[in-house]
Image (cartoon, rainbow, N blue to C red; front, side):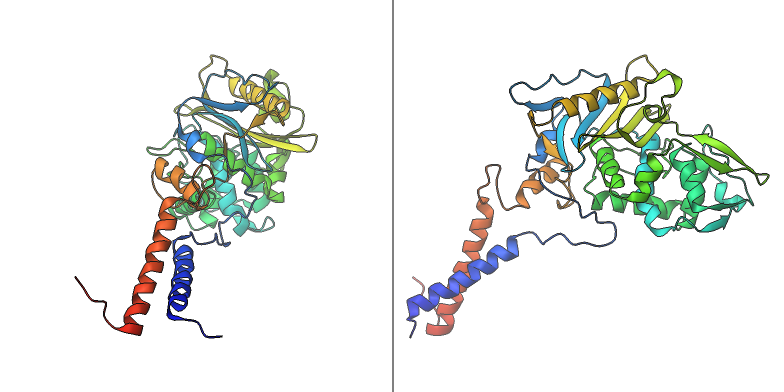
Length: 387
């Protein structure tokens, strides 16, 4: 069968239209070091979580979201990534030791737990005044697993220093942590001190911390450490002593009732950040992750009680609220400001908010297709006459 000129031109144009669509469509996400291949199931717009205030989308019969004193908070389904409710989710605040979740996500994969290391005094230099310590001693030999117990249970900044030294150094570790955060879609986090110690410019957000906690639960090793209530730590003289997890929702210490079904993750405190907490719990086949940053209550343990309220609400609200966002929403978005991230989350699907192809994708394809037809005409029939 012979194809006429008009048909050939149309075919050429259609082929180039398809090429235009492919060229304008975002590249598929790649899997590699630092990329978390978790599920992406929630289509709620990312931009909603950038708006100030409390966001929840209740259905009929949904419980009322708790009124908390925290400057920022979020509760999400750890399995799907669906954000059930949030308050100032992308507000940038100092994270304190909850930043150690990102430290562990970054460093743990490269350090087998059975490695033994003799601590050099230089590795302990720079620990900030007033830091929480587990008691790492110079010239003492530790297993990497001992040091991780010190990080997760005692929030030991001395243990972080040694692990960072084993991973390329303090500054290199901070840079790698930021790379890991971006790979996970956590774009509010800037790392200056990998242990979470107060430092100018060091911030994270309730959204980012929930992303880190959720990613950590996917690692069996991370999950085991963050759920551990107590352990033995090697002493300077060759013996050992007990250490207890400072996450009071896990241990029930200091009059804070333990939370049923809690599986970790990490608490923190500094004078600048106040109290911060990433908490995850599992009940009836569902796992929730909640973050609470800097409660303004006079109660020193308010961070635990407010996390308890969020988790209780999240389990009670199951199936009775629509998501207000997704912990996966920014993973494939290009770098940019908050609004650029929000737009990119929609544009990366090639759709607008209603699921229709965005106008610039269609226009771009049409232009490329039209150019293809013009090229074909010129080649086949010579220059096109001008008026």
